[in-house]
Image 1 (tube, one colour):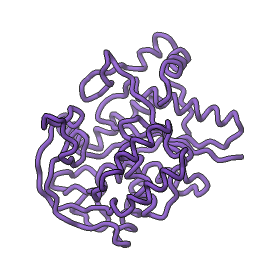
Image 2: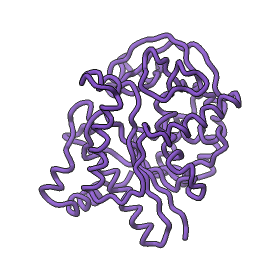
Image 3: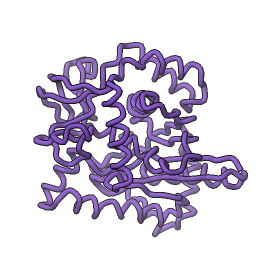
Image 4: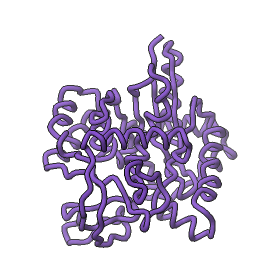
Length: 326
């Protein structure tokens, strides 16, 4: 039997699941079920992303600890999968010991190899996206796009991963593997992004600013940056199953293709000496009145209400019929 390992993106638990989350789970489930019918040995992973500044802020707003907060929200995503009859084999949470252990192993490995260094950074920071920004990220009028939310200027010491050293390797890899990114026209978008020099990736946050994260194994005064934590879930869930890696398909939304999944993730794997995923499928967004569904804006639809009203088969059929993949 051919092994087929497929994943969804892990959902950030700063709010309840909406129709976009349901769509990605159903789409991935349809692929997984089809491959099983074709005789493949399928392993299907989904899960939740549970660290970061937004979680810390949401927990404080409720007056509870971050772990208690994510323990309340993560079951909603597990229940959504159950109600939508998603056939996942595993559900990973990034607060689980099995995940933290692998993240620390990979970070220590890269640090020991000299791929991670400490430096001072001054720049603009988006709390909503939990990432540092550059001038090129601004709108033409000098404002920041709404997707970044509140942006502030900060100066602090952090640890950096030598992302830029692998830029040409990644360009060559994308060109040599036309099935690496689907739909294929999105590969052009990635290559356009890579036409500018890559900055090294900030992979940490000082504990004094962000306490809710995985401590760096080589410096406990810092926690792991969200992407180095979250992206590793695809590997940490199967690190003890040597026959499953690399993943056959990562199914994700188009908003996290560039740079996280198409740039950060393959380079992280290359630096760790691990094979890259075979394909990344980037799907589109469900919208309401022309705007993307978003938990942060409150512009979303509760999928289980549709299941209660019309039944799960009707909702699953509608989602797959109405959205052109990609």
